[in-house]
Length: 187
Image (tube, rainbow, N blue to C red):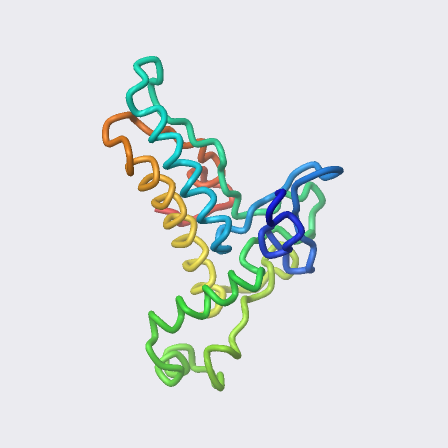
């Protein structure tokens, strides 16, 4: 917060542009897992714990409680909920599509679309605000991207703890990630 707290890309941005920042006067900040500064900080945080506590006999396990929420948790119905609308998230989504489809022509054939390039593709509307009748190729790929991104984030946390300690169990407070609501299809 001291170093990057004023940078809106550090915090989760909802589709309406609202940024869920942490700090003085805010109730609940959500980090943006696609931001490289956030990822570097979390990696260093977990690796530092394992370096200092790997030989501590009284430490039974590492408890990673910095659960990244893929949702904004607004109590009002019809309010934006989804993460993935930050500049860094949109750039990562486009990279995801580029890796998967290799060319915009291949994507256009698969999606039966006519995008001019990957840079022309943005995330779909937040389904909590705009309820689609059915999934589209864009909404499907965006949800797949979000699920894989959160899985990659948990792998980053795991690898950071394992950097200095291969033995102690790692417990993750991952209720949002592992529960059936609303994170469907997260195997």
